[in-house]
Length: 133
Image (cartoon, rainbow, N blue to C red; front, side):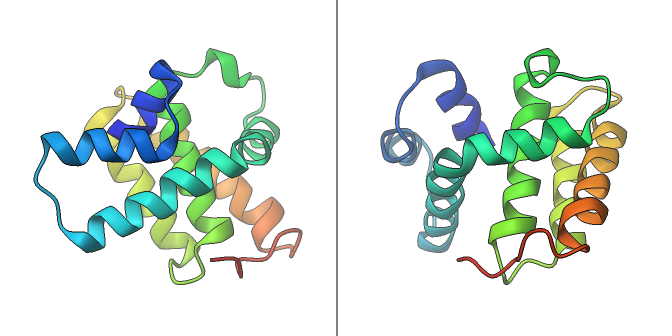
């Protein structure tokens, strides 16, 4: 989450953000590997993720969302659509927890609503397949 926020503000590439984060904070290999998966994937798929989020968020343009909420939604959407070993409901629950921890008072409900709509409109209808790793 913090690295996506950093990418949003600095314009760094995913590997640079991950390297800088690891220089400052202690880490475990599994965490770094999954962070890399998310950072690289979200960076690569950002345009399509943002399209899913905008379509699911009636009356909200992506530019109006806080960096925190936007990146939480990107993480949840990416995991639902591109992480085959993460059940969609788990991706949503984890995103809600991020909203509670890092977002505003309304973030958890907003995140839940958007990701639930993406799940129903795209994932469950087979518009996208959760089979990419």
